[in-house]
Image (cartoon, rainbow, N blue to C red; front, side, top):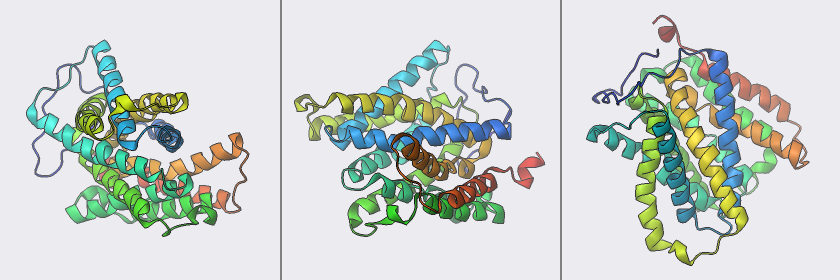
Length: 320
């Protein structure tokens, strides 16, 4: 079992009804395989969003995403015989996590992708580990200390840029507001990764479900007032993208994310932001026939090196 740890200065989260210790002892190869799966699910989310917002407003699209994902996760928890925690403090943490990991970044990215190329959005979002590293340094989290992880952050970002190639950076600065929106979303993701350490000891499905429910509770009323969704006529493609995004790139992905925070640490879990880039480029090359940039293989090597450096257990962890 992973030894629970809580954010400094915060009370421990109450143990939920049921068995919260369902995360098995970590095996690095298994956790890296799950990190690769998470990167694939979140890498695909940019395509789903791009299709979805063609006929659905970003706010309504993200309200549907969180509502459907939360409902599915609650149903699975019920089928497993587990109940969500009832304490107010835990749900307050779920609400804050929802703002950091879904409500604000989901909406910002969906709006930005109506104006930005997906490749540039991926590159900008690959800065998540940098923000997580810097925030952790500012608040004094021991997890962020160490030259190996600093190397991993730098190597991963450099590899992401090399993998996509200089062409993806075309237009950088040309549409400043949507680019800043993606960076603001990325800052939220970095903070959300660190904040998720509060949920150590909970079954990973519980914070995933709790944050989605809270996210839907915030986004759905706003959608009803602003977009009046009953007046919309979404295409079948947008609706299919919404369902795929909610089930795979949200419900399943967030369960994996909260598990990886427990096993790899908050900063290690953010390494998926780098892996998304070569995965996305590879999918485009295989299924869309797009040519790989000359620096792609060099970038892939740098990404892999960065991810390994960020996910290797520290000496302090190894001595536990």
